[in-house]
Image (cartoon, rainbow, N blue to C red; front, side, top):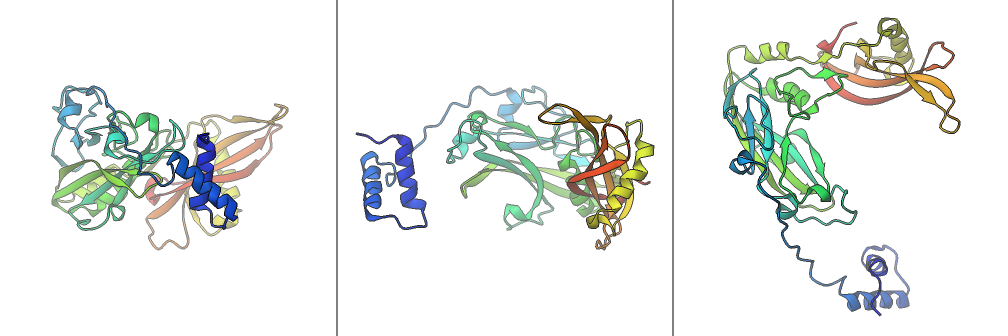
Length: 352
């Protein structure tokens, strides 16, 4: 009788991966089961290529395997590339997007064991400025983020914007606490632009695809852009597109800020930090109910606090920390609930 797939997998995994020695009978049974179905020591399965489907549009075929730079967003099924450019002046609108030449499934076979929605692959964005990364591994370049690729999405060609939102130009301010914070824009403005020099700069963007559970990767797309910087261009750019704290729309923002700041200063982790700005980022109070009874127990708000750490030697570099506070259903003062994400921002992003 042919053992079931799950039973065979269990036997094979025990034979190959267990750090403890098995009894002789169990070991012989494992080897016999593997030999019977040929699933432990046979050659790796050869996967047949899948049809990635029709091209999304003429630009998808024209720019297959390329990162395209443009002064306007270029959609996946676009037909007009008049906005595409291989050279810009720093400060002009800048969008980045790419099309893959084939499906991730065909380009990079990866081991999958978790089903259709598992992130078996991942696409990563890397940036090299003026050849500084020549001869170095990609992981030593500037990391602009990326996205996971599920098995279900791996069988078609990909189009993706390098910024989190396709309509979001890289030449824009990073809004700290904004509803659509774009991490790629923040990194571009704070790490790449300051390293540019006056004159022509070469910006190379690489999209790498890699397996999530194997040491396998390959090029997904790449492109090169010339960025011309006029005299004083970097300084002007940093003023125009500096990080900014999202203005609060909460009706009690001004009244709540003193409580928020005092609460943060009472926490040991931030007692010695200098708070330079804060804002309530929740538009309204968010009701909190008991999970079992549904009874209202309080109201939560989110707030961003920008602070300069006492241990940070760079006076212009601050942290923006996302905090949650709660007010009892009957009213009263704020209760500190916890801290969330922390990111590096310019201290000039906001002032109290």
